[in-house]
Image (cartoon, rainbow, N blue to C red; front, side, top):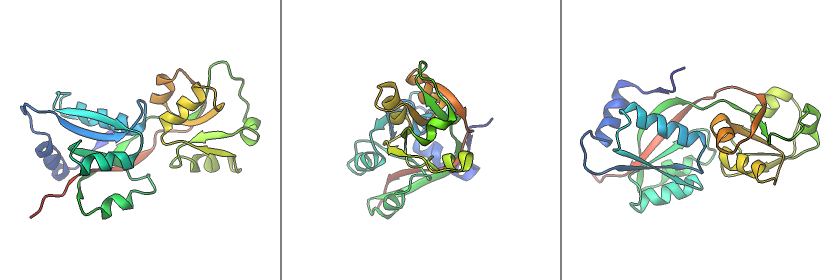
Length: 204
């Protein structure tokens, strides 16, 4: 499955933002910690330009921290998923502007637990499920009943919370499952999603 789908016009802008042969790495901020879908897409972007060292990925705890780092000049670009419900605030920031928009498919999503946890579907209606807000609708589409939820800043943080024993079940992705030594007990799918790379606004 092709991870990134970037139009020719957007690709030209992307290549201009990260020129080949540059002596300085371009810093791309996105949502951490390690194992997020945002990191996965950022890594795919780096591979799409030949894996050269021109793109350095910087992980922040929230998208808001990414945008602050961008506005302050600590990173050069910031990658945000359109599924993030507060992305509108970034478009309204007078210091920033969207540089490119493209489609990127996430890793596979599912319900994950620790390897020694005995899971059954009935537990979804008694246990608390930890998740980033964006993929929560997956539960309704796949199970059709309300579930008690706890919120994490990212899918990888949700996986870490389960690995640390704070919760027993997380909605997370395959990358975070590997990162935190969990197991999938129910698989959803990859999620086709669109993304924006923001840059600082250039006065014209």
